[in-house]
Length: 322
Image 1 (cartoon, one colour):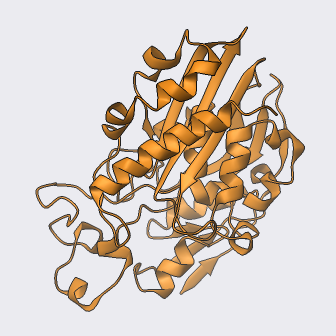
Image 2 (cartoon, helix red, strand yellow):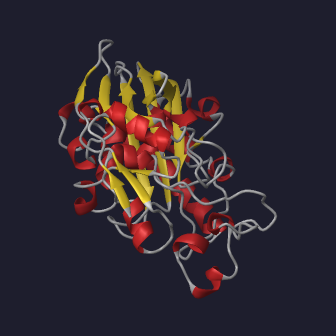
Image 3 (spheres, one colour):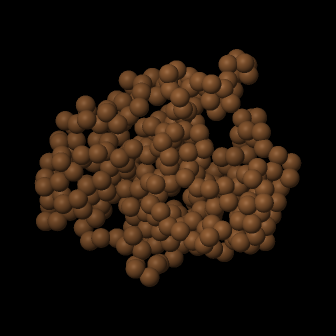
């Protein structure tokens, strides 16, 4: 295998332009296991860890925060500025295990490949009955689907989207910015809206607003290491005890982060004291946003139930006195 180490970000972009088969790797906690398990066939890697443009957590000119894409997840949990963005801090602290957070990057977490038991749990039959991820002609999650429906399982991305965070992307034409939500396409295989020769440099968070609260809650088999079965990131703007703005983003709900569309109609204008009771009446509404994805742990109906559970808990967590 060829492993290239370009000396600068500009050289890395040029290398990717000249080598269309090369795959970017930084922390490697997502890609390397797939290579070891033979879930990927890759002969050329481009190592991008270490460029100064992709490191650091610092204030931006407008009072927001810039997080370099190569920043380790563990570093986010040790930075006081990130702690103020509660949902993001909580999401980063719940990714996998401490060992993985000490090696995995925030960029890698939000760009990780979607997962599915028919692909990631390699069994002998899959060598014959290939799914779309294996180059086959069908998705075993939804037999009639023309595209892959593997599940999106980043913990951090829903929290970033709840804060309207933007990606900073370096391309041959220069630097561009786009909302984190727009990073993702519709389907589950290579669905990141990045050209092959574009590199995620970092994430920009907007300035914190007064009277703002947020939380991230996930459901997993174990408290650490496991991917989320479901997740809910919530951000509320509160004035004089009344919710003025609300946003909820579900994780592990579909092929990309899923906004709770219409949540403002249920929460805005309501007293914060009434929110937990209101949340408990929204099981049917919440269930609409969770694809009935099946894996080795839960079926589609159970996933919807878990989605409702984490939503209620995220509302409650958001209102806890700090």
